[in-house]
Amino acid sequence: MFTKFKWDNRGIIFLICLFMSLQSIAQYKTFELSAKGDTLNALDNNNFKQGKWIISVPELRGEEGYEEEGVMKNDKKTGTWRKYSLNSDLLAIENYSYGGKDGQQQYFSKFGELLREENWRGYNPDAPYDTIPVYGTGNNEIISYKIVKAEQYSVKHGDWTYYDPGTGRIVKTETYDRNRLQQEPAKEVAATDDTKKKVKPQEVLDYEKKNSGKKKVKTRDGATSN
Image (cartoon, rainbow, N blue to C red; front, side):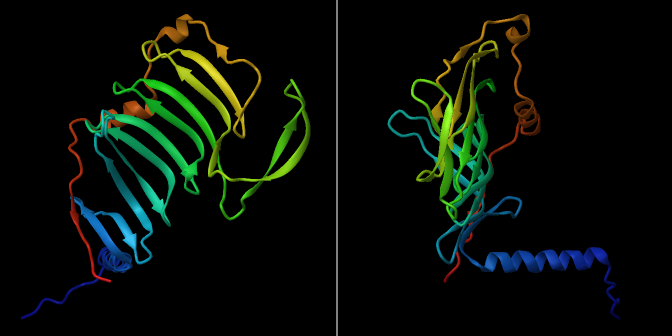
């Protein structure tokens, strides 16, 4: 005697997710699976990197190795990427657009201390022209604007802030306008009672709490034939 299977919303959702997952994997030429079954390091049929990626760089000629993870779209980094030492210490939080850095970037010591914050502007390769200011001689006064070809994916744009890793205080700031360092000298910031206190950024604290005792992700190869 057979028991009639009752379809409910959970069963339908499961089948939809399974179908979408199989459909997604089918478009990849090679991929890996994490211990949780997530698809990683996928190459599509055009050999473009797609989806979640973990990139490992080993130690070489005295240079320390590292790992970085984030999302690839058509072979280009996009969104937020995180970089770790080979001991799983968070070293950087970087943001990308169109394959180049875009927005704020943060860099840390192995002890979670904020070293510097950078600001970048990413260019859209589909619109590779930009309007930039023309400055007068010997000053920061804008006298006109001109249209130029954006030959770089990204340029320094905005404030760059450097921190003393021992105290957490700001020691220097620089301001860039589309890769041009503003002529105002870098600001040296004197220590105060507020800046002497050593504080880790909240994202570092959240990461350390979430990943305390966490082991590295193991993957298995999922290469498929063309």
